[in-house]
Image (cartoon, rainbow, N blue to C red; front, side, top):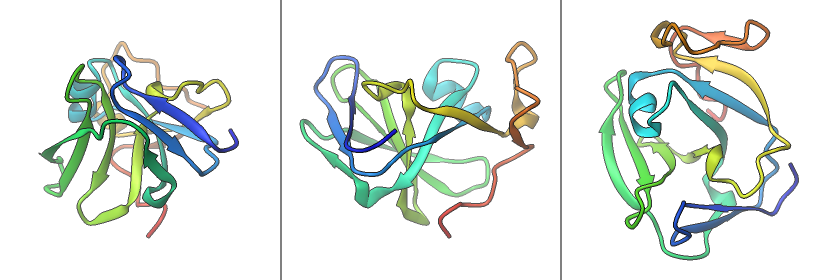
Length: 141
């Protein structure tokens, strides 16, 4: 998908643009992503934080402690609660976007599953994708 990309929360209060091409999606099966998404996994795209600009209200931040013990900043709409993205405290130059918040995510492709050791038995994990039983190393370090 070529930039600029646009997206936002369910109620439209939080809006953003991304000036970076997004091609791939990772499905995260960790307990925290399941809870934040309210689903069997969370579908995410990773890109540099410098590529994202908020064009309407800014999201609120929740500080989470990941299973690794590292702090993770989760951003959500203060009005409707939609989860927008997250950032690792130790790697703030990377954004992990919830791709369901994009206005059009039809050009993306699922390429990997992470935290597959935590995957629920009823969630399909495509055997054709790259797999990691826990998290994969950061692609931008």
